[in-house]
Length: 112
Image (cartoon, rainbow, N blue to C red; front, side, top):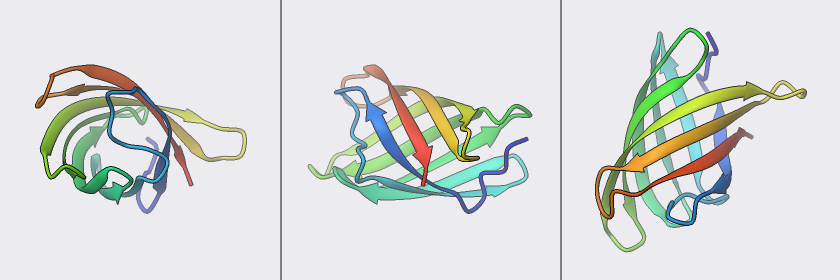
């Protein structure tokens, strides 16, 4: 299992209907198979996620955030890790808004 505890991630790619950007910083905390994160930056004033990490390091998560328009947004996300040659982790994410327009998208986060 991949241990995400103490790792910091930033988006390097996102769908146009997403709210995170390169200015958004995620601080991961992992205890056992439970992953949490606080994040903010760019269009995100404050956000939190909680997820479960499986044996392959994949993450099933739920998130909520307040954006720069003071809207409370919620969603679900599946992340699949890729180990890079430099030892860092890249996360390939497929997500779905459970608020707002209920659209979906894809993003890529990389460990800082």
